[in-house]
Length: 225
Image 1 (cartoon, helix red, strand yellow):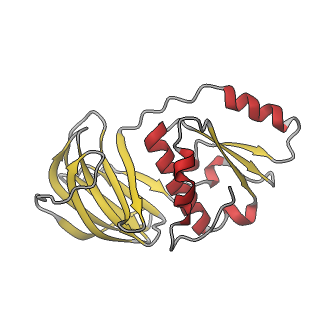
Image 2 (cartoon, helix red, strand yellow):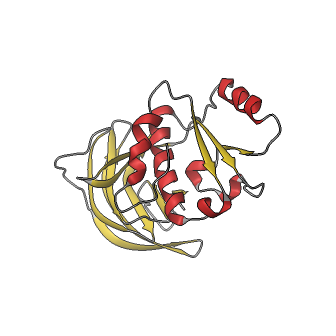
């Protein structure tokens, strides 16, 4: 399907249901230098990749067929860094695609859970939490974006109401010269209980993890553009 670059209407959502179907073995992206350089395109692709990974695992297959030979994985947003990259004029391209289709998916086990709950009516909600450990509270921050609401509740479903323990809002953090605005709570999280944040605009990156108990902080950081 053709890509529609329209973040305001969350046009990237149009491909979500196709990607998360069990019968969809690989996501193939046709790109070139000019399109992959657009921050709006990179953000939409990142959000779509996060949807795919939450349903199919972080080793789900993504193949980028790039027109030029200049693209490297280090140039891609975090959710796309695991993608395979082939040049569109690569010799025996068809055979190489078939080989990648038949390879087993990679097994990647991050220490966090992340799922998107995104609809036009409710906006962009991100759910995060631990996989097997226990978080003594949670924090999420955005760089070049805004947070407008947060909540805590059972995993997999936006909470209708929540009791937030010691909520904090609009904290200012700096990481590698990037300025983040963060919200957080002290609620205990485990594999069955998550932290939910609604983001506005299209952040260039997000950070999240357990609420730090002192000056030392260890966050997960995802670059989305």
